[in-house]
Image (spheres, rainbow, N blue to C red):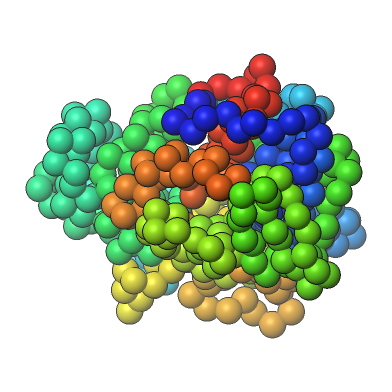
Length: 433
């Protein structure tokens, strides 16, 4: 995981500030604390960022439930699996089925089986629906060839779909719902994705194949279990401590909080790119060019028990359920309902749901908690910024980490921390490029 930045001449026991306690900041602090005095700053009242486990009482049982980070798999999360093994974190098999429900249930289908694909039997005789299925087969079979073409043309997903003649039903009823659900983005943002990024991700994650898919898993006891394990190894963790700004100098880094100013020997910024940009009081032109290019989409996540925010047909219910309503254009945040009972081994018989950006609010008495999670948008400007980031690492005693440096997922956040650790000579033996 090396890059162009030189290894810093930091003596053992140097003070390192890590700002942001999502997976990137937690892993950076965990790895660097082996050789240095690390202080981890987190503005929120809990550690974990999108790893946000809450206790739910339902049907006479109390059990931890994940509301952000939910699943990983045994093929494309090798570093996360290795970290969990080192920490002694256990996991359970999970389910990653997917359904689409459009226009208040007028069209519904799921990819679990032929019975769910044709949950509406009239679609057996629908030329539009059958054409969508043909386009799915064609798109999946052409993915590698389309990737090679996209590398040459730098086409967006929208341009690729148009030039290749994929039908509107394929886009509206399959590809855009699936991608919007994965990246928690509006469908218009998915069309602006660089096709190379989109196709590489789908191929790497085996999303475009029917057989030999990876086994998805969920953390036993909720994701907070790994957060607790990491936090237990750290000496200086400051929850609910907002950093107001940082300023770099020749002999150190000043970190400003409401409690005063502290001097550190090095700085790891593991916050979202816009937050990182705001914190840098002495940001230079190159840093601004990278950080300002990465935009974020806020998504409201509601934990509830209202089955009206699932597909109308229970046979279609899946782990991930895309809900599209008439009159909502592609610029609006996607609405996805995660049926947590299918993702995690819960003791509840009542369906427990996390809905992102609900098209209608849950019925009174069914809402349990509400959160806001920001997700990066991967347009061409963001991908170009990722390519420029390595040239900034280590300059002015500063390193940058975050899932925004990859595809936006937990493995990406961890890999960014591993790149930081490599610069400090703290790369663990289990790290995989």
